[in-house]
Amino acid sequence: MAGKDPLSRTFSALADPTRRQILTRLSTRPATVGEVAGAFEMSAPAISQHLKVLETAGLIERAAHGQWRTLSLRTEPLDTAAAWVEQHRREWSERFDLLEHHLTTLEENDD
Image (cartoon, one colour):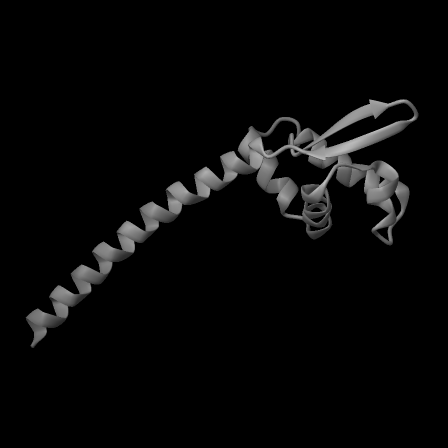
C-alpha cells in the first residue's frame, strides 16, 4: 500500500470494517493499543496489521508515553476523502440533472 497515492491509501484503509470500527473507537478519544485490541475478538498480530494499515494511510498517529503507545485519530485524510467524494457527487448530480432535462425534452417532443 505504500506506493499508492494518499487518497488511494485512505480509501483502501476504509474498505475494511474492522479498520472503520477502530477509527470510530478513536473518534471519541485517544486509546492505547491494548484498549483498541481489547475491543475485538482477533489475534494481536491481526490487530497490529490493521493498525499498520491505518498508520500508513495517515489515519492514526502513535505516540509513546513511557511504556504505553497511545493511538489517536488524524482527520486530515478523511477531510481530503470527503472533499473528493463531494466534488464527484456534485459532478454526477449535474450530469443526472442534464440527463433528466434531455429525457423530459424527448418525452415532450414525442407527444
